[in-house]
Image (cartoon, rainbow, N blue to C red):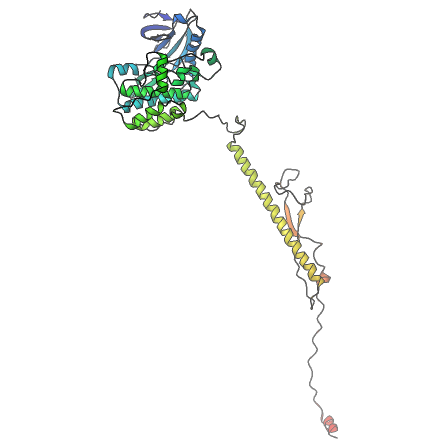
Length: 437
């Protein structure tokens, strides 16, 4: 079946065996039509009658297919053999996993170890954001390959035991199931696989960091029960010969209580970036936020779109202008009423000398003849009135004709002409003589 030259599904030719795992076999093959190398992962024949294992195997393909991180091994297809067992078609990677790297080269420098786990955080953060918990992060599932320029590229493999937040997970995983590699499991995952969450993956990455720098895992046990007790109760062994900041990151990853660990892969990446000498990556640092649609049809009823906010601002501006206009009209009317009252009081006390009273026009609201009637006192928060066509009714302030004083009442009395100047009479000689006699 896995011998070189075997034809699989009529389109893949097996080239060589790559490895065997707990659930199946991985081989290198060639796609005959595309003429490109691929990796085929087969489920073991002994699991043909295990629907739960088959479902978990297919779930690995679905989980990896929805992730787009460059640090996830791409899944391109899923097919079935003649026996009905499924197999997964993946990208062909050239390199080796970190478990083989440790066995061959021994512990790594803290900068290199931090860089590798930092790259893994990119894939883990995207998985967590999509509601996927890996549950089996370990050096054997962290594959080291290279970019075209030779820079190291780490890929996260094997989502076969991943926990997807969906209803079918409860049918696949029982409460007492222990899924994954116990040495890298968090205490809560050792108690129950269903209790694992994103912070359980943070614990696993902490164990990987410890092993990459020292060559050993922090907790060992002869049985799963013994390992679970040590992981839950024993203090973390001190890390010797590593920088203090690296030891602090490992200690926080391996905190007994999940709430005391890094809460997201993004937080862990931010702590590792300075140690690796890399810029802080922009990874997810919290739960995925609901999508907010701009424009009509907003999915979130509490979200306000940019269009809605601008419309509300425009409406508020129009309303404010309308209120201001009414306030000006009201103020002018109040001033006119006060002046008119003063004129009436002045008329009741006539001045000693009749003079023309000051003529002060009283403002009033005159509506256009074509517009409908308007309420005399609109509410303070009302917009300017509209006519039948939807246009604002123009308000005109001008003097009231009935309040103007009559011209006869305001005309001053005529002033009599001044008396003529006195004339000087010159007496004649006869009048002078008569007066002397």
